[in-house]
Image (cartoon, rainbow, N blue to C red):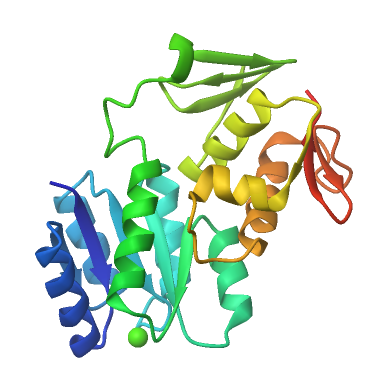
Length: 233
Ligand code: CA
């Protein structure tokens, strides 16, 4: 059974979300603050996903996201942001969240996002075999190890979130090819994803920080203006 942590201080929302997730077959942990969430996580390691409200008493959802991500690059994190807080989305994604949902949201949307996220996660599909039997993809001086879900640059390991890993996988399989942002979105987040292509840009920005010597003048993840991105190994 997949386990999800729901962090939301408004009891009515938290209980509604938890109830619906349980009915959909999830094991649910509930926390009303970031502090309580961290304690729960330390007692229950190996959560598949976390839903984090931004506005929390005490430590907010962003700090919580950063704290969780520091220890766990595999857990799927969805930020619940207030309506119209566009900067919340970008900020959440740039500090390690995999997705965001704007409040108010429907339960069906939440479930769809969560299911899509977990389908991408290595942990939940532990037996997911790499395609064509290859465990390591090599591109220039980069190696993508599908077993450990790590990226290596000239032998140095780079920690990636699952979303970042999938983007790199797409790049490695299409070197030198301009990939339109919508294709990256579909390839990583799946068909029928509700979000917009901005999520691709945010993840690319974060990947450049990890992959490029000089993120401001990238040599490997190149921008194709008005179109998308191209991997140059
Ligand atoms: Ca709140």
